Image 1 (tube, helix red, strand yellow):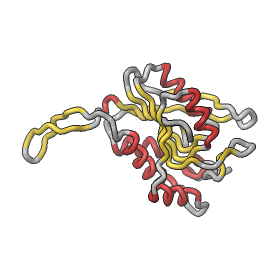
Image 2 (cartoon, one colour; image 1 turned 45 degrees about the vertical axis):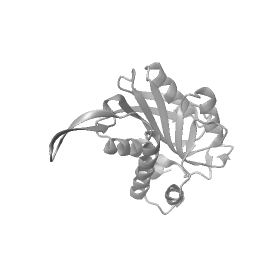
Image 3 (cartoon, one colour; image 1 turned 120 degrees about the vertical axis):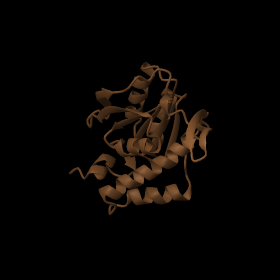
Image 4 (tube, one colour; image 1 turned 180 degrees about the vertical axis):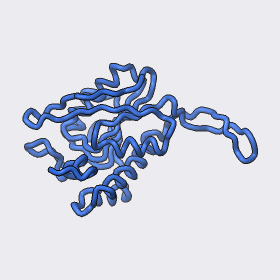
Length: 211
C-alpha cells in the first residue's frame, strides 16, 4: 500500500492466528478468542507512541507516582456485531476507558452502508479507537469516522483484523488523517464485495448465526 497511515502487522504470530481464523473448523468460542488476541497486538502497536500521564499508585512500599495511559481520554467504538469481541478485548486491557456502539448494515443490493443505531459517548477532545473485524469496501468505517468526527474527537484510529486494498484506499482517500492498524491486507474484493480470501462472515462465525 502507498498510504503511510496504514500499518500492517505482518509478524509470524499474526500470520498464524489469521490462518486459524480462516480455518472452517475453528468454532465460535475459539474464533472470538483469536479475534481478542489479535486485537491486543493491534492495540499495543496503535498506542505505542501515546504520551503517558503521571498517576499516584498505592504500592506495597506506599504511595508512589508512575506513568500510565490516560484512560479517561480514550474511547473505544465498535461497529456491531463482529466488532464486539474486539471492544471487549480493549476494555479488558484498559478497563477505565469508555465504550461506544454503532450498528451499520450493508445493503446487499447496493453494497452501501446504512446506519441504524448510534450509542456514542461524548467524544469531544478524546482519542477514539474504532474497532471492526472486516474492512471490505470501507463504507462502514467511513460512516463511523464521519459520525465520530462530527462529535469533535481530537484523534481517530482504526483497528481491523482483515481488509481489502480497495476499502483501505477508499478510507485513506476520504480520511487521510486516520491511522489504520490492520493484521492482514488480503488480495481483493470479489464481484459481491466480499474479501478474498477473507474469513467468511465474521459475525456469523463469532456467534454461530445460521446463514
